[in-house]
Image (cartoon, rainbow, N blue to C red; front, side, top):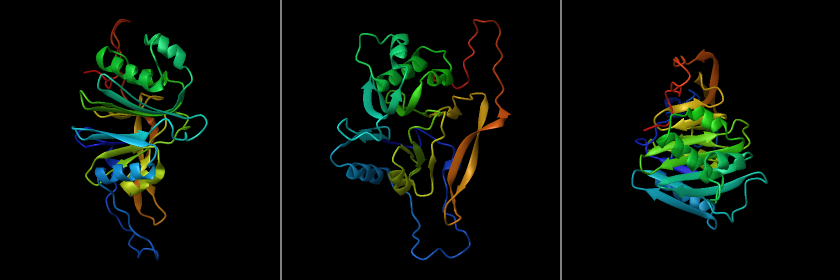
Length: 267
């Protein structure tokens, strides 16, 4: 899967963007510096790399989603791919949720055709419309190996998450025009974002308004660690939970008070 969002829709951590840098030494023979590509070129590369099984959906707000159709070979025996939409909310999902049946009942989807992507859409709509629920708890309730990207065409919101076990690969980076790129194909990401790409941190979620947060450790801050390539040049950043840094908890007054985090997905 591949998602591209204009910087007006999603602004990733600034550490992910890596400007041109040099080591101070001549490059090795045969070394060619890569440059990030524009969104149109990135989408063409993805579609051309899977000519028989790929499709793309673009939106007027500067968003584009591209993925493989169900006939494409899965990345592994444990991974499935889904692309679904409902009520102007679109979801690309890779992986599986082991407690899907119980969550379908919890969200009142019994009797309807349901899969992992539709469940994620319903969970997102619940956070958006009928909170207050802590977003980290909702995502943490999804058991299994998964990665997903949600785009809300009504509000322009972007929501992405990666399971804590790291069973499904996911990467993100910055395109030439500043757009954020999210995908599960490392070669596409490297070619698209050059040095401004990094693995998406496991056990974390990203929202276009709330930024990057851990749903495994919601009260801890995220820390960016510089990455260096084989030439010794800075190459994006890795993100991890900082165990020594805590976010101040919102005080509770009585059991009925809303204790949702400051970054619940409510409008």
